[in-house]
Image 1: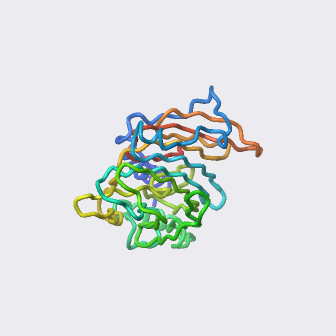
Image 2 (image 1 turned 180 degrees about the vertical axis):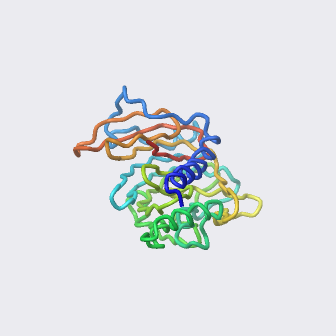
Image 3 (image 1 turned 90 degrees about the horizontal axis):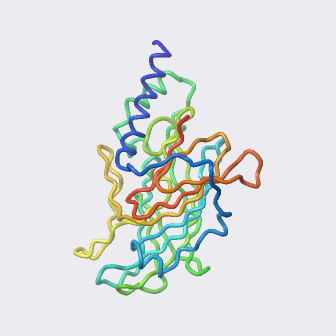
Length: 277
């Protein structure tokens, strides 16, 4: 096999998954290196009043990419306003990163590309192409909440139901392992596809009085989210060039050789990020 030819082909295939998602986000912007953001810990808090003035769902996410292990450690604060006429006793989040726990549940759209990558690199172990998300803790006002994460659905039991028009804020601590190769969430050489990397609120179906818990399809794109407001801070190595939706800024991190890439992206259906040199 002509290695150079395959390298070009595989990059095209992986870039296709990047381009596919970019097409859905015309407002995607690259890093603006000229401006700085205040320390993430000092960032504007997401309040119930703010949530009511904009979308019913708001995220504030702080994450750190471990580029050696290709893990993302993160914590999100999510404010949800109940726009239904039902009293909601639990919250459900999609954990589509768990589609990568098994080859059988991964998207078949990139199957051939990953097979060729492995064929060209026979020393790679099959498990490097797998990943997933571990939910470490869920809290509300400092109190731990009971939860389950099964079949790509994180279900959080609330201590008190949310009546119509009311809001609740929860914190979710998580860690994601990125699979190697080509997926909507994956890394390959100097590229990272960053979709589905954090728990995302499901859509509540008022006609059925239940949350959508459908796992991610293996055969086609099945992103089904409500538009939300995002404030995201990702700690990455200095050399990484990151693209993501919204107004993007960067600041130096206290740790040498790293930086914090931040954005505010309001009324956004799906939040993704990419690294591509």
